[in-house]
Length: 127
Image 1 (cartoon, rainbow, N blue to C red):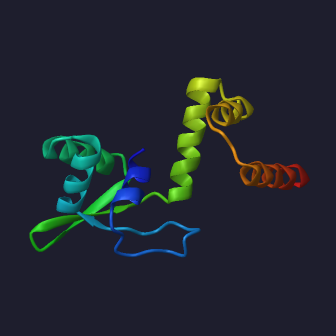
Image 2 (cartoon, rainbow, N blue to C red):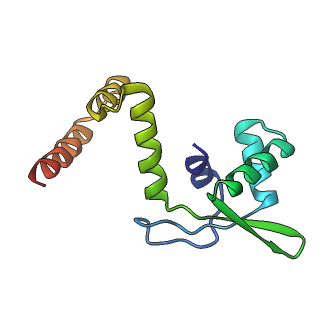
């Protein structure tokens, strides 16, 4: 969830073409201010989370003047793929079809959404 929240709530300093990872760098103040609003976390909790993410190799930081600037080490697509697999394994015994059906049952889909999904399925079937 962190990446999605960051992407939605933080101002990016460097962006890709929208299909690839947007290389973003966020200073400590940006991260704490925005995550504190979204998650109601204290700055200390946010610093702990950042430290753990850095230990896991998800982000790195550099010191610029008096602040740390954090940059992701993981491509957005790789992160989403890993999280999707984790979700499918944890809640659906690895069955992607069950996961997709669950998501579809939770939302009302427009005719356009259904057409788009059908197109995706048709492309997958051809591969």
